[in-house]
Length: 468
View 1 (cartoon, rainbow, N blue to C red):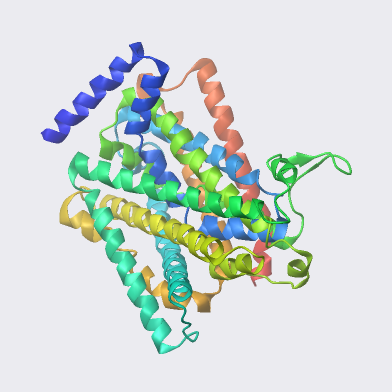
View 2 (cartoon, helix red, strand yellow; view 1 turned 135 degrees about the vertical axis):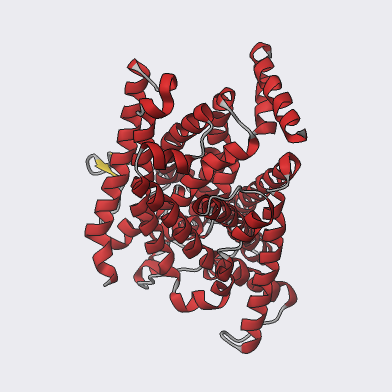
């Protein structure tokens, strides 16, 4: 009853904003945003970190434009999902099952759970590995690789991270106050990530070599007229793999599943459509673009050297990147501590959101309400990922790239489902877009789906054969 009272009070505040000034509306919007930040937190994980490091190290600033474009493609589809969920108030899985196809709905939820569990392993590997590297730097000791002592400490760190993540996640099921605490925690971690990498870039800008900001700005343009018009898309296999990973790291299949349920958890309805779109831009697009761009700039301005390219190195871990940043002349407080904390924050954020989306997915599969002890147990499904702290080094860093791409292959399933739902009169009834509005919606979604399918085809034809 208390939650319903709070939601109704918030809804009345929202309706009263129509007569308020723009600064007042923006202040209220910022204070109530949340689902977009959760999306940003989930995507700013190991996949984005690896894609950004590879992109900067191998291609310098060439693919800076990919992150915002990929995110805009995702936002187009997520905006349609938010419109559908807020308008009808139905849980997305059941809407997909009833109005599109039971097969599509089950593929969506099952692969959401599978990809989430797969991606949980590298998050723990990155978080625990960077934490140990940080401890070794601060306390001046070095453990032998693969030793019993190192394995034990990595597992202890991973378990501590798991306990912290579980504590934060379980607050999400404690009513409106728990949701607010959860969202504020997520926002704080995202801003910490951005500030950390901004500090690294600022420090690099003050070195003797500095940063060529003109070249950086040109990296945000997807085409070039130098030596004739051409698109700034790599043609070699490594470059294509990085390009595909950058696209897939922006919006993943599990993010599409989480988004609709985060609205329902907050009690948002049709009146919140404007806030939902605002949240997508300020909570998802801008933070993600800032964080990944800063990482690419940091890697591109230091790691992208001719010696590095000639070495034919085919992988680069965050720990190696931290050491390489230090080797370029950046002080350890910047290259190891601040950079390392930023990477750790990315991984922890992803771990937290993976647990949340797993909870929602399992609850849908077994028709359980996402509250109480059953939901808490469901959030623990990805917990075996803790062992990624010791097994990830044996899997190899490059598994992050094909895993991102596999997630991309599954993404069109959800996108096509959203498209069909947006054109379903049986589902949306009188709220289904019509006329010019429907034409604009459909055009934008068809373009987004087409680009995603082209990337999938490109990956299957050009990149996938190289792994066999």
